[in-house]
Length: 127
Image 1 (cartoon, rainbow, N blue to C red):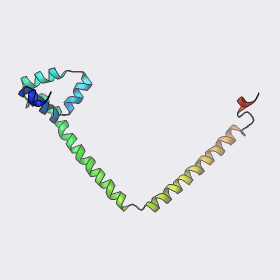
Image 2: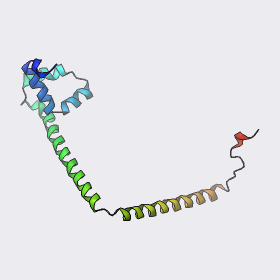
Image 3: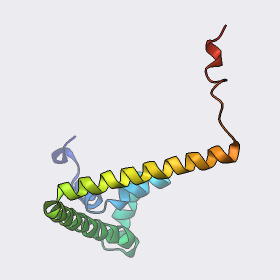
C-alpha cells in the first residue's frame, strides 16, 4: 500500500517514524506495538516531551554518520601517503619476530615437558 492510499495521519506518522529511527529499535527491543506508539503520537502530538529521547538519537546518528565520513576521509589521506614498500618490510620483520618467539616458546615447552616422542604419533595406522 502506498502513501497515496493511506489516511493522511498515518502518512504523517510514517514520516515521524522515519525521522526518529530509535523508535524502530524501541519496538524491536521491547515488543511494543506500532499501534501503541501511533495512539501516543495522536494523543500527545509530535512536540511532547515523551519523544525527546528519540529525537536526540536522530541527531546523534547524523553526527555519527558525519564522524564516520571524516574518519574514512582521514584513512584515505593516510593511505595515499603510505609507502607500501616500507609497510611490506615492517610486516616481514614482524612475521620473522613472531616466528622467533614461537620457536623460543616451543623450545621452552619442550625442556619443561621433556623430549617429545614421535613413536606414538599416527598409531592408528598400524595393524
